[in-house]
Length: 328
Image (tube, rainbow, N blue to C red):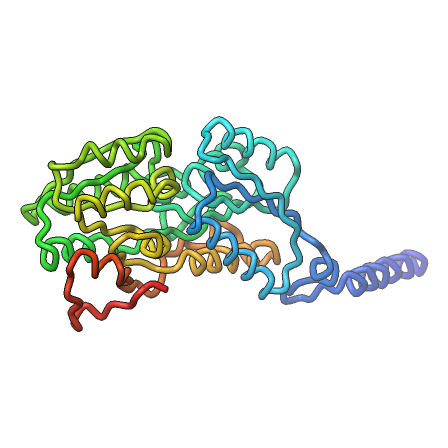
């Protein structure tokens, strides 16, 4: 009997030593091994453009600020959906600890490739409509993240177009193959039903189609609204050229497009939503939370940013009540 008690005490002592060596605390805090671990993070992005790149920069900075050591496997699909699918398969098979999906198509591809590896997305407009999560409040699976759609952004933009610029026919160039874009166009059309305004659509399949699609709107619209469509934004200079030649005021969906020649945008910094996604990833990697329990976040700090040169070229008088900030 005594030998049995000695063996039991030895087992308890050994287990205590083991736990102590691992640095585990009863409160579930980060272990020594976890602190020293370098996590492998897969990054998938549909195309390179300044907004998505800024979101990725924000994501990395958040992990750095949280003390998470990471090495990144970055793969860009360059707008090719077949490459996007291949990237998802490759990242899953490589055994990464977490996947950062930077765009709706990127998130959809990796979500379809694994039900197990944690996925944190950003630059997604409609996470529920894209079937990435069950709901904004309770994602429910292995996917969560931040969206690039503030609930007041489109209403404020349409109100500005009508009340300040006198617009009635709004041209929208977009890739109808992007669920992200279709959702935004449909939201605008629904909103304009009660505003005595209409949308004229011009669809593209690749960035090479953007200039011709924009030119097809000449004479049919009195303004343009370029949403956060990856295909169109990657070729934004083509749209800016047509808008300038035709003296069409062009509202855009994010600040980097203002810097590149758009008139103005109600928006937020993509760096910020990338940073917020990185904070969520840090919690997941540290074991403090699971994707299923982390609500999808909307952007903070909606504001109006304007390109002063474009406004001057259009002959606009800036009003104090707009509370506008100018792009650098």
